[in-house]
Length: 259
Length: 277
Image (tube, rainbow over all chains, first blue to last red; front, side, top):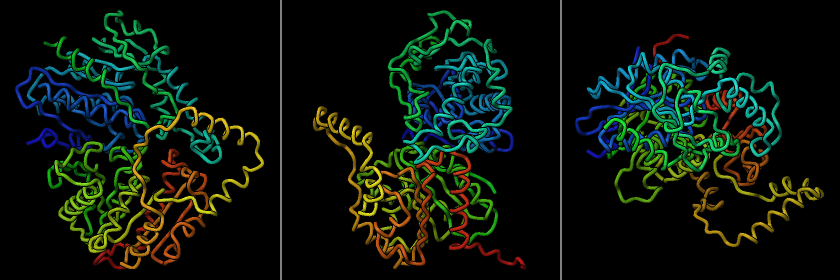
């Protein structure tokens, strides 16, 4: 059986509402890795990288589960139904599913952008032994402001539209996705501390990086990776985000810290 | 309605989600191809919204990743990309046939997905299984009409001339950069393909947007590009200038899904056996 043949797509969770792909390790493992996706367009842009990361880690002997929250990707629910508390609940369900499939109790979580605070906030109920966060959003209010600005710029973007579109045409939307007022408020209120401190922050924000000490960590827990990721570049809104150095950094950290 | 995840294909290398309505089992199956390299959920989750809507109407659907895209792997065969695409779509048809009892299928593709759907539909025997195709921002060629509409209003715009000159200067300074793009099918070949498709009984829906306005800028351009086949009753064409290429706004996506739904219902109606009017 080739590696991709062993990667199993399935639905799980209450009522089979969540979609996931399990990457078995092929040998006995002492820990497993849960990949917590970011939300919105970041999720679609990171899909390839998440798959590469899952394949890499599974190839190195760690079982991996990647999955979609309710209202995201292939999971049930509409995009406008995504809600913070439900995302945390889904992480707990996914962790249970990963333990059930792998037989491994120790789980390390990885999350990019909003996937970072989701993994950190769900760390205790999900029973994570560790969390790695890639450019986690730690100032929710600033993030909401930035997304509002980008949405406004998108409507005026004449590389995308023949003529600028009216503001009323994108009420309650961020970069292609419907966002309900509850989620908007929940994201705006995001601020550490969360249930756990990450053992590693992967920083690809360049000059715009916040003060990661707000997460309760010092510089030894931050790894700066170049080049910077163009998360906020409208011209590359639909470009996949790929970073080989990031894959190597995650893999090396998981093996070193948990050896 | 239920959705099921599958790993399938001749090398068990493909991943897709089938939407399986409970009834009926004789409906046409709708298969949605990848838009470029975006995985099977589609740009901004458009494919998920579309397939679920079609499922509620009774159409079985499959959104899946072609070889090496998204969650799918490589088949390990030595094939051209076109052979691979045709074989992958054939695998998708077999799966949906087995799961939902479909014998006829409609392909839906956006951008590169439309090109792939075209590659499948142009096969002289495709009509044995294929009932139709929806091409979203598919093949387009700069016709004389396009050039007049595009360049005439710009002719006396000094700013545009300035930008053009500086672009040309940059290009000359950069020299000849190697190009790795795939050449599209020639216009006369595509035009002939459409004639052949309608002669073989395929129904065609073409929905184009202002997002490709560097190649296509008016509904008349369907006929300018592809000739009289565009007037055939089996061909439906729509052009929405104000919409972008990937339907980034929620209402634009809803409108697209409604258009696909209306076209499907009128060309491939679902017969509800045993239901009294």
